[in-house]
Length: 380
Image (cartoon, rainbow, N blue to C red):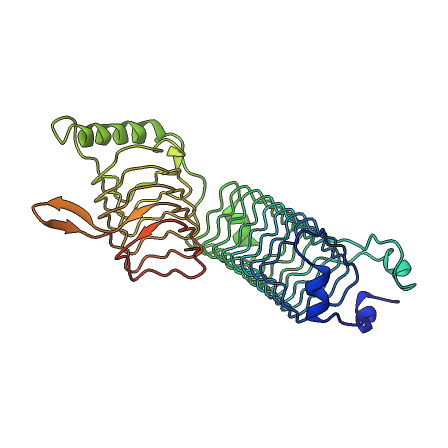
């Protein structure tokens, strides 16, 4: 039986040929092409039809492939770091050993699939009848965003999904043996029938999943966080409002609030835009909170869990974020650095030992901020 591998003898395109075929402003249709090992980095290939292509060892880092048709493509060991692959069609594609670290894969489809092409080599006729399984074995998807992605039935043995955002993803029937989901956000993920023997789901957020069932399936679920309770939301919001009154009255009214060690996830967007200077939330859980525009000058957020939190435009001058977890947080335009205290005194933002992996720090003021783990963070 003929397979895609049998068609690997197709003439490999040269870099100069690809540069012409993928010229600026063109909608690319290049099916069954061999582009292995070529440099396609940072190209805009949105809506391109690249079905059945060979991209083994190719550099697609930072490329834009929104809604691209990549059906049954070969991406073995390809570099897709930080690529934008929103709603990309990877059905039947093989991405074994590929690097998709920090990629944007929301709505991408990795299910089984087959070629849907007209014309081409005579062997293609038989290929149209073959269904191929999606493969992500040994792929690196650390820090990627897979919101609402479809991975039904995919083979992702020993794949790295650590620090991923996978809200609403469908992993039904997938082979996830020995896969790593440490620190991932797995809210409302469908895992029915998935193979999880040896999988690591350590410290992950698993809202909507039965942790005991995951453990019975052979996964390590130590340190997992389950659904946040909504019962305390009203009390927590009232406490935050009391603190805001204390800030705005310069301490003359109300009182400062201490949220140390508390789970604040039920607040959702309730704190958005509030004045919470000097608040203490040491070791608190603020995963996924909308803290955009919040005034947090001088706040104590040491060792707080701020994974996937939205801190866009937040004022963090003089705040203590030492040892905090800001993985996948949005800090676009956030202010960090020295906070003037008067009489020539100031205090810096502390971020030493903080985990700021895959965070978005575009346009953020980072003056004097040192000592954080910025692996995969977007800074420019």
